[in-house]
Image 1 (cartoon, rainbow, N blue to C red):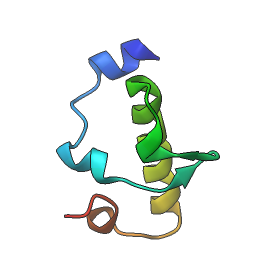
Image 2 (image 1 turned 90 degrees about the vertical axis):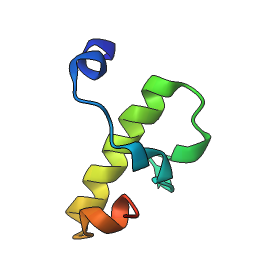
Image 3 (image 1 turned 120 degrees about the vertical axis):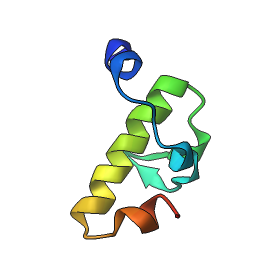
Image 4 (image 1 turned 180 degrees about the horizontal axis):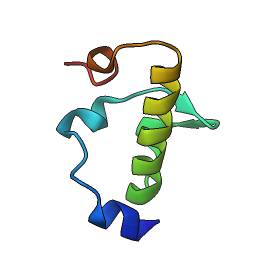
Amino acid sequence: MEVFFHQAPLMNLNASLIKGIICGYRVEEIEDELMRQIRYLDKLIDELAKGRAMEKILRR
């Protein structure tokens, strides 16, 4: 999994603004950087599936 994130494009600078609970964890409280990035993506997918606009999710 770490290889994926090292080879992937950089995360959006506003990704750290993504807040909320995903898979039973509050995203902003996850200490492990890799796990937090994974949960950011989980949260992003969930919010997009609910029909929310990318701009709202990333708080642009």
